[in-house]
Amino acid sequence: MTENKKRIVCGALLCVMALGMTACGNEIPDLTEAESQRVGEYAAVTLLKYDANNRSRLVDPEIVIAKLEKDAAKETGRQENAQTEEKPAESTASEAQAPTAQEDITTSLEDFFGLAEGVTLTYRDYQIADSYPEDESAEDYFALDASAGKKLLILNFELTNGTDQEENVDFLSTASRYIITVNDGTRGNALTTMLPNDMSTYVETMAPGETQGLVLLLEVNEDMANGIQNISLRLKNTSNEYTIQLL
Image 1: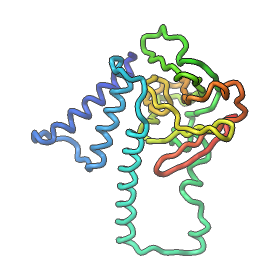
Image 2: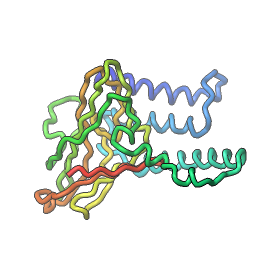
Image 3: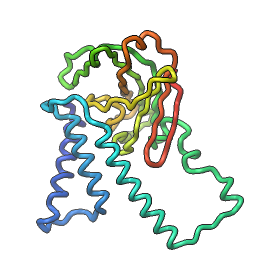
């Protein structure tokens, strides 16, 4: 495990410990109930991702993502209700024609994830395999095998820090869904794994000029594996939505 991963795990543990000390009278930062819960969930998912002794190689995305989306939706609803009570809604022609926040934000992968200027995320290619990674010699890797009668569709992305300073990248906290559609018919959520380069759970501090390969995985039927004609990716969370045609 790299030093960065060790720091992530240690940080997650400290977050959980800090939350558990509230009843003992220790002084900790003031957090709302929703914020405290998200910190705990973040720590749990991060620990699970890097726990080499964990028996399962998959994290159930419906448990983690649905929970975060539900909490975020409640928080957004409370904020909107508070704003409505404080200021009556006004409707004008100029407001009706103004672009929505989604139209402003979801113009690229970088915008969707809120990456810093100079940090780029680009799709590279795809591959079909029975397992990933195929080279299991590296100690930090968790191998993932396709189910019987299935193949793994592996979407390869490239994340680059093109700035002259360190940049923090955190895809996990966006609580996003990654919906992959193949040949305009087969559709499913990308597998949420414990792979260190899984885009859906990637959290890292990138050095200046560093490039990292990231992946999204989906199981497809064997008879479709050799006949892929098009692939699209739909990104969605509680505030934004973006679809990109990959092939």
